[in-house]
Amino acid sequence: MKIEFSRAVEKLKKADNILILTHRNPDGDTLGSGFALMRALKKMGKKAKLLNNDEIPSKYSYLYKGISEEDFTEEFIVSVDVAEIKLLGDSVREKYGDRIDLSIDHHESSRFYAEETYVEPDSASACEIIYLVIKALGVSVDSDMASCIYTGLTTDTGCFKYSNVTPRTHLIAAELIACGANHSKINEIMFDTKTFGSIMLEKLCYENLEMFCEGKVAVISVTKKMLSDCGVDKSALDAIKPITRQIEGVGIGITVKEEDNGKTGVSVRTSEDYDASLICANFGGGGHIRAGGCEFSTTVEEAKKKIIDYITEEII
Image (cartoon, rainbow, N blue to C red):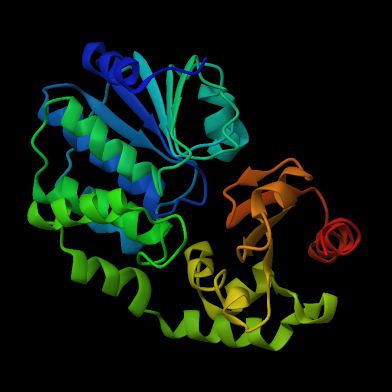
């Protein structure tokens, strides 16, 4: 059921022993949202903990620095930045998928799987919403919370250069900096720091880059072997996804990646001429106008052929 902002805040005020769920292959927005909310709830004297299906990449370690682990039986479950139930990951979905009390999200493709859902599609990131939630809860935003929230803002907006950025995004970012968010260090970690392995993975991706539809579509394929050979984990893909859209004339950039579960994930980035969420929705996925994702139970090559055939026949 879709609810209003005030209802979501009221539910969190009344709740305790709260489990916060974030999406698999965690990024800065889902983790920033989750850890900022957890810090705020703890500051209110509540018990709260966060769960992710996958290992959290080390570059996000500052988000949970200083947080003590708590062991309790969850009485209230909230998901953040999770548009649909399968994005929780298999193990988390199987255990908690039918028990989620509240979902806080910003995706237009939100599937309303929780008992109650607050969704704000015009928000550039889930962290924007969480910032407003924390303020409505009456919690003073400290530097740690501010850094968590800033992480979601900057990563989901490409360091504030994507079209999803609004005046509110910048105003909130300014308030977070005033609260002590370590904005320069966060941007350095997220956008300017790469391991040697990550650079080698980029090299391999450039080598297998393919162009379709007279240069309007660019595709990069990433296999598990490529990740293994370069000694990197899935978080290295964060720097890979934007590459295709940086090519002049490309309107649709696609990253096709082999997953651990025998499936193939597809990330789509588009220019203002195309809708990534609509492309991905055709294959059971979703996302935003400029960024979306979907999944195939096929090999990388088969998944690539399916999405290219669809784009060639229906989109371009």
